[in-house]
Image (cartoon, rainbow, N blue to C red; front, side):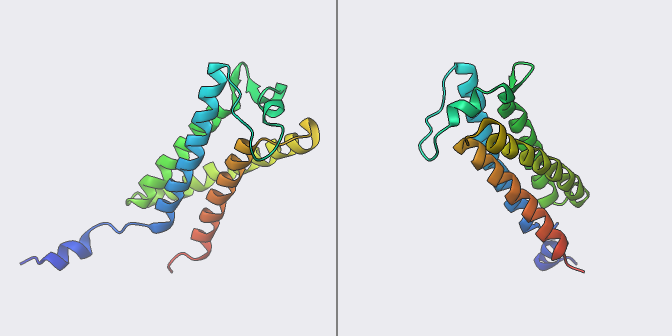
Length: 150
């Protein structure tokens, strides 16, 4: 005879760090979608924290074959969100795939920060938010590996 506590104990356990990563990835997704929409509307988002968004967002480095980097970012954040959510809800085998995704995103983010600092010479607050989001995802992945249950 099965009891209610048996069904609770047999239910898949929710992993907190991957679900937190999914929430963080949503921040990056919203930021990237916003920049992509503004790009295709032909508008420049207001730069209220740092000066230089317009120079970064209209630079030769802001597009690949006419597609804004923000659109690629939206795809990357959607993938990170999906992988983290699935891993958090029981598909644990996807967490290492999430890690690979986030490592690649972090490496590309370092390149973009280099471009802003040393090639373009100014920063974009939306790009900095994306960088912070990516690095937060990377840190969550590393923390999950350092403190995983043995």
